[in-house]
Length: 290
Image (cartoon, rainbow, N blue to C red):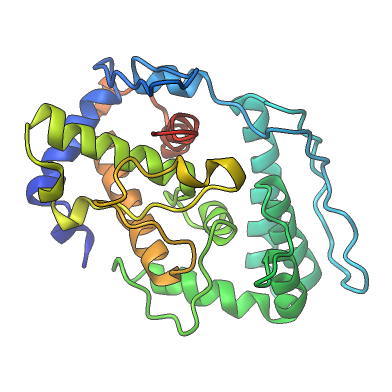
């Protein structure tokens, strides 16, 4: 599906409603037993804090893999959005510089990707693999992997033609730095979008939750640890899955389109200067939606 085909009907109506929430219209976000309550989306933006614990500027060494990591400031626990932006600007510059170089330095490209994973808390090894061993296995051939997704995304569709697509909580962060207007679609952002659209559909419009249109049934993603069951406001409506890369990619692209359109519609009344700020508000709000 292409952008203009997706942004029709009920999706267009939700965009219009959301555009008003980018201004001063309230969302009345409140979860029973949850300490965080936000009257507006901008309140959520002002409350942004990441990471949950101190993150050193460089990932730990990777043995025999000669990555060239960018020099990144250390982030203290619960850093502000401004502090995070400074760090992400450094990583983004390193990532794009390496990606666009000729020839491409594989050590610098892999180092920038590792730094992205490290910032996002997903530079890990799991029982099913994980981003750290995947990068170690693929760092020499990393450029065509990234190019395939970037070039495929440029075709303007919400589905990927890339064979064996890798798309998860780590790769969404990488592509958010590599592609313009590409948000990080993680469990928190997905949870917030699901909560907002469900609230609009049931409370504002007065419709049954099980009649929510398919094009607004955002894919939810499981959180880690205790948050695993807190990131889906209606499991009977929104699918939760962590291992469906093509679905993850599709909903990331749709969220990009939807938020960009809402920001356009809001115009000068928007209190957000960029998609990254909207993403940050959704991230903070999505810590818990049940």
